[in-house]
Image (cartoon, rainbow, N blue to C red; front, side, top):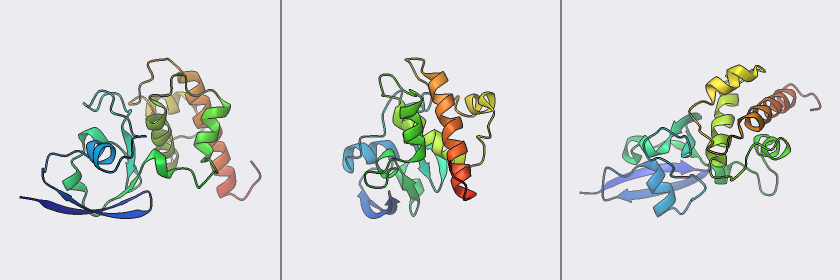
Length: 165
């Protein structure tokens, strides 16, 4: 038995036939579509390395069955930049040393983008830390990550208000 699903991934339509209903979004992205920026960390929903946005909301793609998301709009780390122009969150991670080894960085960035889009970031570092707590960094770059999210949130809010950053 096969299952046909349609997903919009990084603004591109994909019609996919699954031969196993147990395929997760993470495995579909990495193994079938070769979008390897989304990382497989724990494969149990505990580390956040696989965070993507589905219909604008943050999810752990290792826990999400692909067949359950037919018709969904997915955004992965590969779709965040616009050509050579980095997303404000990506720029902020660079400016504030929000990474060390880089393994968790795609999930951290996707979680930060979702957090800002959900209007949950605010300008309180403790609130950001709490809302990003599902994304683990084994290197301990949490200070830089928090500073990056604060800076990106300010930049994006200023851009939305039509103010210079």
